[in-house]
Image 1 (cartoon, rainbow, N blue to C red):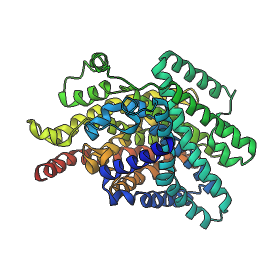
Image 2 (cartoon, one colour; image 1 turned 90 degrees about the horizontal axis):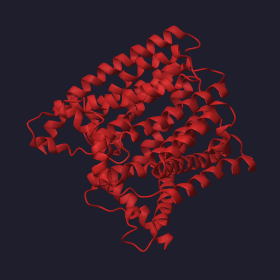
Image 3 (cartoon, rainbow, N blue to C red; image 1 turned 120 degrees about the horizontal axis):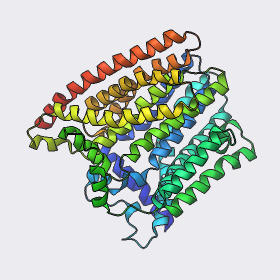
Image 4 (cartoon, rainbow, N blue to C red; image 1 turned 90 degrees about the vertical axis):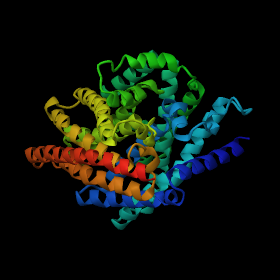
Amino acid sequence: MTGTLFRWMLREEWRLHSHLFGGGRFAAFPIAITVLTGAGTWLLGLTGTAPEAVASGLVALVGFVGLQVGTIGLVGRDALRDVLGDTTLLVFSARTLPISWRRLLATFLLKDVCYYAGFVLTPAVVGYGVVAVAEGTALLPLVRLWVAVVAAFAFGASLSLALVALAGRSRVALLGVLAVGAAAVSGGFVDIVAYTPYALYVGGTLESVVRSLLPTALLAVLGVTLFEPVENGSSGRHRRADGLFTGVSDPLTRRPLLSVARSSGSVGKVVFSMGVLFAVTALLLDRITAATGIEPQPGIAFGTLLGLGAFTTYSWVTQFDAPREYLRFPVDYESVFAGTLRAYLVLSLSTAAAYLAVASLWYPVAQLAVGLFVVPGVAVYVFGVSAYLTGLAPNELLFDTALFACFGAALAVLAVPLLVAALVVSIAPSFAVVVAVALSAIAGVIGWWLTGRAGPRWERRFRTV
């Protein structure tokens, strides 16, 4: 029974993605992943970054992807229904099939690991491997990297599911666990990296393998055991959400804010998704310093990656929009995108500022203050690129291979020089900071311009199709 369910879930996943994202074009998505990863590895190599450091970053970023995939409990059926209509996925069919909810969820988690390992993770390792081998890296470390990358995805998905499950049972317990974990890590009592799949990549001993994989298994069991599907309690959630943005009078700004607040997970999913990126950035800064002795500028690094991570916020504020529905109303799309931008900035900038404040516990405030000037420009740029390329349906269009390549290239044009500035700050600190702030300001102007162009572009397209 479980084997049959697993095969049908794999088939369902493929059909879902190929239907939403363009059939044959989506089949070419692994090629785009390979090319982008290889290009990124080569470009980072030009800055003096060793292949081992890039591999470490790849493991961390894949863990972040796993954390995002594991937020099925935050997305819930409301977002799926908006995208797919009245469609029930197998993972939500416990009431109609003679299968327990826990078996469905465990099979779904295993399916995700296998599906993404074949479709995304392996192409990423291949793209890195082509460049790394050309620079003298042996094949055995690449095999170990592939295992670590797949394990990192499973770790991220399991951790996310466990946290969501714990939050569903008791938010007080969740806050307690997070507080204890943060205190243990910040106090130096626990080397948390030693208990993640990254240790599998750098260690290779039997002890490191067991130590790095056991937490993943425990988290998966905990998540599957504790998780409860979210039932329809929308009326109470709506009442609580309506009180969050009472001061917002513009309807085109208030609507996306309320859509996020009323949906499963409320604004907490914005905080969670950016918090994951914040944690990954902190880990990368620590690993880069440990591996190379270089101390990156934390304000530039956090500002850049939190700004780029605001794309998830763009997905949240547009997830309930049917792009053509605005044709029925006496409003132009330029105003729609302007209102959505305001809602996006309210959520993303406030969350980013809060995480920069948290980072001040470990980094000098003066250095982190640079991030306050970097985040807005990067966030507006991400919004402008997303709005111009994908309109109000980013999740449906970004898996179009050609479009994804354009989107990735547009972000890389900004991200690479900013991250280089963060790395070379020890050589020319003042110059690096001035360049980073100037680049983010220019990017913000470009993003603002693209946002203004997005409205007329998509209005013409919707009216002619």
